[in-house]
Image 1: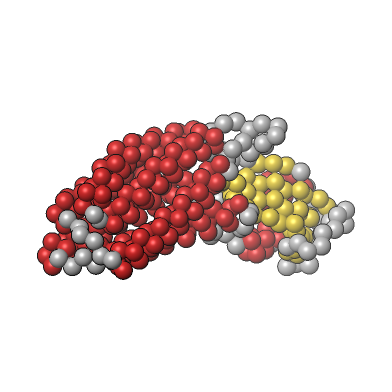
Image 2: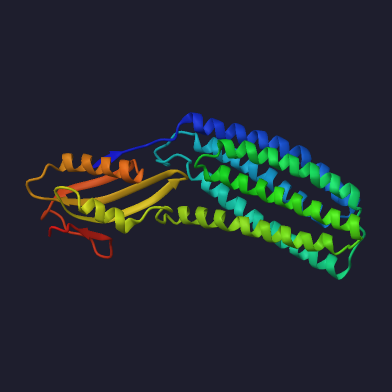
Length: 307
């Protein structure tokens, strides 16, 4: 049995950490401004956007802590270190987004039942400033995100905030031009839907990783058949493909080769195939001669087409 590993670079982790820190400082500085602006103007749209930005601050703090944990070395108790901490933080981000959207819907319902006075001019000024802040934060995260699910989660928060700022600007313009007070709660509902929608992909991806599902973009059936079709391979079974953390897929399998084949040579060829064709460089392959072992029950099994 052989093991072939791959590690994320320290530079990538440091870049993600710097980006998350910069955005945390930026959004935290503006959160109180938007909360005060929402209270003074009576705008639910601003308060909704401020609530989401507050969740951004908490989520970014969690993300930074997770990034620090992910950089810690492996231990005998945790052979992969704390790489999954990033996924837990991403899951927390998604859950937070759902909670924020539920609060917005409840407040919007109350405002639609009993409209309140909203100051359109100051609301427009605060919303415009919020758009600029979120655009700057999104640009920072986009440049450094790479394949980090944690940074992707933070980016989704900031993009939802930016869309919320656009919605608040539209509501403010409507109030200024027409005096229609329902614009604020209706736009708030739209912001809530955007927040809810942005949480779906994040929750799906983080949950799939925690459940060790086959990574997106990879087909276990196709990979198993491709391995079984390689020279000297008789059968591939006990095939498992999962994600350790974002951008870090892993594969394990039991491979049977012909009785005259060199197990080590066939293993090295399969490792090269998996790295070049599927970008899977963390592999654990048990290679044995046919007849020495048998496939276990209820497992993926890929016999060679030559059999």
